[in-house]
Length: 207
Image (tube, rainbow, N blue to C red):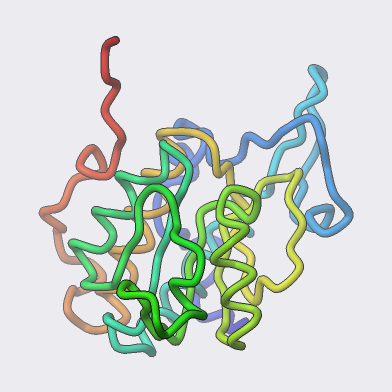
C-alpha cells in the first residue's frame, strides 16, 4: 500500500472519526483483524486503529480511481450500508447493489442481471459473502470494510472500520467518494465539496 499522505494529515479530523464510531468494534476479535485493533475497552469491546482506517480509505480510493467507474461494483446487504452505497454510486458513477445480492450476478452469463466488474467493494464480508465468493471465483480484487470479528480471506484491501453503525458507514463511504473524486482530479483537495455527510446517512424510519 502506498503511503502517499503523512499520518498527521488524515482525510478528516480524528474527532469526526470518533464521533461517528468508526473505531468501535465488537466483543470478538479474529486473528485476521488483530493487526488493526488498537485496544480493548473495559466493557470488552475491541477498538480499531483509526489511523489505519484513514490510511486504508485513502488507499482504497486510489485503487478505485484507477478503474473506469462502470467497472467498479459496490454492494451492501446490510441495512445501514445501503444508503451510503447508493449515494457512493451517485457521486462516483460506480455500479452498485443495495440490498439482496442475486446469486450468479458475477458468475452466470445467462442471468439477465449478469455483470463483469473488474473491482468489488463490499460493506461486510459476512453479509456480502455471496458476492465475495463470486469475485474470488472470477479472480477480481476485493476491497472490504471489516470489523474486529471478520475474517479477511479473499479480501485484497481491508478497511478496518465499524461496518454495522449507521454513522460509521456513512462517514466511510462519504470519505471514499470524496477521495475518489480527488484522485480522479475531479475535485481539488482543498476545494469545498457540496455533498454533505448527511446525504450518505440512512434515515430512521418510524414504524
